[in-house]
Length: 221
Image 1 (cartoon, rainbow, N blue to C red):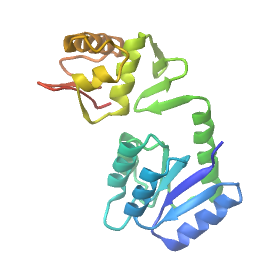
Image 2: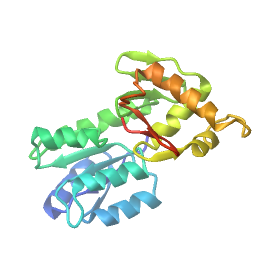
Image 3: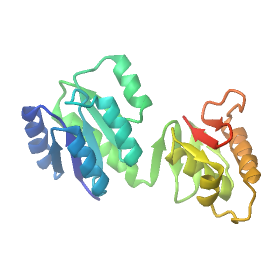
Image 4: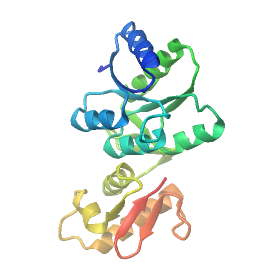
C-alpha cells in the first residue's frame, strides 16, 4: 500500500514537525508551503495516497485549494487547521474533505486518522458526497440504503458523480457509457429519470442531479 503524503502547510515549523513525525510511521511526506506548487505536483504525480491541507495559506484560501484538489483527483484530504469552529468544519466536509483536525492536536491522532482513511480506501469502497461506492462490485449505497442500479445506470451515475459540480452534456454522458453510439440523447434522459427515482431525487427540486436546460446535467450532491 502506498504511504505517500502530500502536505500543504506554510508554517515551516509545523511543516517540519509533521513531516518528521510521519516518517516515524513509515510515511513518505512531501511538504509544500505554497498551494500552487502543491497543486502543480498533484497534477503531474498521481502516486500520493492522501493530502493534509492547512486552510490559512498564502495567495489562495484553503477552501479554494480543496476545490482545486477535488477537481484534479478523488484523493482523500484531511484538513489540518486552527480554524476549528463548526462552521468551517461543515464547509470543509461539504467541499469533500474526508476528515478535519483542529489545531492544536496530538500528532498520533493525525497518524490514526490517516491510517483509518487509507484502510477504508483499501477495501475498494470510496465515499463521494453522501454515497458509498464499490466500483468492483458495482454497488452504490446512500447511508444504509442500497441502490440497485443497472449497468448503464451505474456508468452514468459514476460519470456524473466523478464530475460533480460540472455541467455534463448528454453527448459526454453517452460517450462515457457502453451504450451504442447510435443511441439517441433522449435515452440518457430516461436513464437519468430512473437513477433519480432510485436515489430519491425529486426532479422538480433535485438535491443531487440538476438539469441544465439545453445542455445536460450536473451532479451537485
